[in-house]
Length: 300
Ligand SMILES: [Zn+2]
Image (tube, rainbow, N blue to C red; front, side):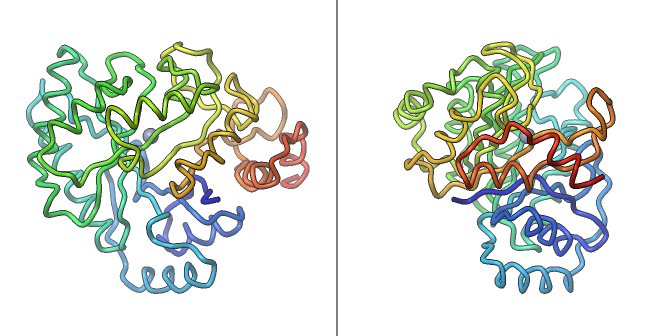
């Protein structure tokens, strides 16, 4: 089982990220090279890469299972302000360079929101932007994430993702499936095998390079995108466990992006990372109905 979670990327960069993943019992991890909501990025320190590589080797973590997530503010679909669109492309180019320096192969990208454009125009803008990146010359692969279809989000259907993939003049592009987004987009995760069969026919399973495993706070087809802890949402533990253990995607890293836990029940501020406990119950294959209590007890 290749499983991990979103981790921080702080002052000691990849070293801290790997240490955090190890503390959760993970053998995969996903990081933002800075804050997810902004584009301020500090230079990559080469000493930290060596140290991280050593730590990874000692803990059986391979670079293919270290995933980068591009910040949300990159929007390749919206060309209304042409400077902003070019800024997004340039930022992604720099992100590819940062990842290449660190030896990270996969960058997850939200395809983008069309805003005032039609969906079709938005998708064409995404294709045009990705082609400007000349992905054939990149060592990293961009993974288009399947979206919930909130607002004007592009890439919430398999067909839209396929259109983008087919429009890009490079094979160096793949897909990241997100279980919460798929549920919210209208794909029933309890029929995941049917989804995979359709994906295999239209796109090909070899394009799936990463999976985000999240439960959902909302019902099927809600177009909302609010992640819930594993087994605490509408998808449920058994369904998510079946997906994680699906033979057809067993070599694909599974990344948790579930919400942190508040100090007390009902509090808004989310402070405790749940990943150690969620990974533990996934490995054991048994739902922990005291998950929140266990986490609060540990950090108290
Ligand atoms: Zn994402």
